[in-house]
Amino acid sequence: MRVTVPRLLCALFLTLLPAAVWAQASCSPAAYTAITNTAPLPADFCAYRWAPYRNRLPEQPQRIDQGNSTILQREYAPNSVPGTVNAGIGQLMTIGVLPTAPPQGNSGYPVYIASASDPLVSINCARVAHGCSDSDGNRVASIPAFHIPPYARGSTPISRWSNLLGDNNMEIIQPDGTTRLLYNCMPLRDWHDDDVLKNNTCDGYGSGSPIAGAATGSIVTSAGVNPGNLNGGDNFAALPVHYQEVMQGQINHALVV
Figure (cartoon, rainbow, N blue to C red):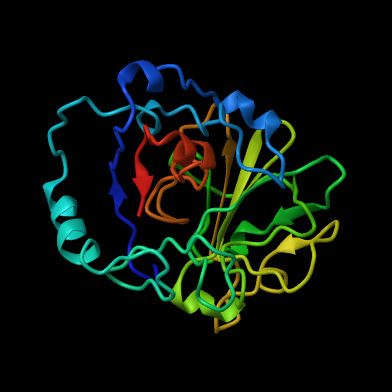
């Protein structure tokens, strides 16, 4: 189904602060109302209800996935350095700069908050290459129409064809807390009312294929998982590191690789 290196769901944690500090850093999916599209995600926001996304490992955790741990140690750790321009198989990329050339920035998980005045668009699930799903791990035949900021773009910021070297993802949270996720959706212009997400609006990579995957759900009450039609199974907003977590020196949740 995928043309790039498969993602591994890895439980990587930082323990730079004492337990008394991290215990105070509570978060809630309901804090999505404080999201703005021009600022980091709110410090008290954490997506979805599924607790494992936010559970801190014990002080002396036992490995629960030796196979993937070995892959990370053997393949990724020796080859990954900050500033990598072309993160391919066996590399992790943390560019830390504004992308200037493809494929910088590929495979990220941008999250947008929509307003009721943004364009209202719909998805033709019959024209979605890998189908549609909810955010509890189930396939669905349709997804309700949704608002999207006109400028919303996925995670291939420089060249739509550089998706051959990465993935193009984005998640759009609605004013009521429902959310939509789009995989390999690369619009050629700003969004308009009544756009229908299929091959003429979200052109696929190289072959004129339709949008590759889509999902719906609630950022507050859904589990935040998909059956593999978007990525390895975690929804986009669940696992990325937040700016505030980096600044406070501790990440208390699993990360996506």
